[in-house]
Length: 193
Ligand code: GAR
Image (cartoon, helix red, strand yellow):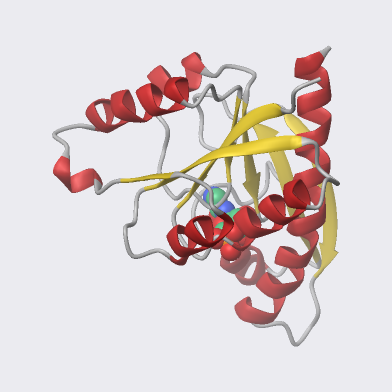
């Protein structure tokens, strides 16, 4: 069976991109990363994709009149590369309903909190500011709301009394590198059935 074709969307460092690409390269995650979509030309993830030999579509939103305009190009790219599942991994933009509907039930996101707590930006800081003792990681399907789609997998991370945003983010990231490949595999198996 040919592996499911995925695209990863990212805006920053792309350490989740790397974790997923590494798992596909060593055969432990049976999907194929066909494309990186990145909205920040200077982001480190662009280098990571080049290193891994994965094609990328890199754009600057300011070069387009509207979100629909650049998403139309993204959609063309996804179709050209035969992408069957879209994986948002630190893509710091809202996706329009046009793109969500084109990939309904076939678009995942990872978020650094136990949703529905702390949706949106700076989830780790939100958790620290709130004083929760446990936070975590959520992988969910993307719908038209902000981090509201159906939850696929979650893992808890304990908050320590002396945690900074940096130390807590580091432990959350370590969990993400395990949880995202697991959830992608679940979603891919379901789509293949
Ligand atoms: C990850 O922690 C991810 O959960 C978060 O951005 C980080 C990206 O790190 N996503 C969100 O906050 C989405 N709202 P990475 O670029 O090193 O993979």
